[in-house]
Image (tube, rainbow over all chains, first blue to last red; front, side):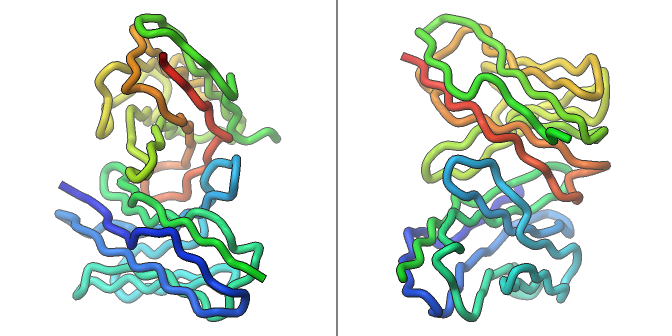
Length: 109
Length: 113
């Protein structure tokens, strides 16, 4: 079946550091891929998405590229801020939704 | 607009009790879904609906019932609560398919003793 695997956390970085959160997927067809973010005490919010191979999703300085050859959708940001501290979920949709386990990011000043 | 609302925010049940988690949306979306969030497992889809009168099972449907009589409301029922159902429950809506952005409610934290 369809599934998502993302790197386990927690991840702790200093402000202005480079961020990578790895995400790989298994799917029987051609899914859409998403990154959602969850701030403390809130529901999930869409961060970015990509709907086909080689698409790059971007938002708020975050980027991820849909790589069909490596079945990956890694999240990157060049310079993180304290306000980026949250839990990040990789997800795929293909008839239904599958989420990764989530990666908790803490950014220290 | 309120978006997606969920009630209650917190609930404690005893094993065997029943309850209904409420979800309402004012976004006029056709799709509504229920998820549970457990540590280390991300979100898992319980049930979803593609419109009034139409529901289907997700990845973990056992122990839960749903119905969709209106576009706005999508309640989740636990008929006989079990400790394994202790979790945080999120309701979400989206436009026409799972390929669209989903909008999540604030969640209900349920503890079953």
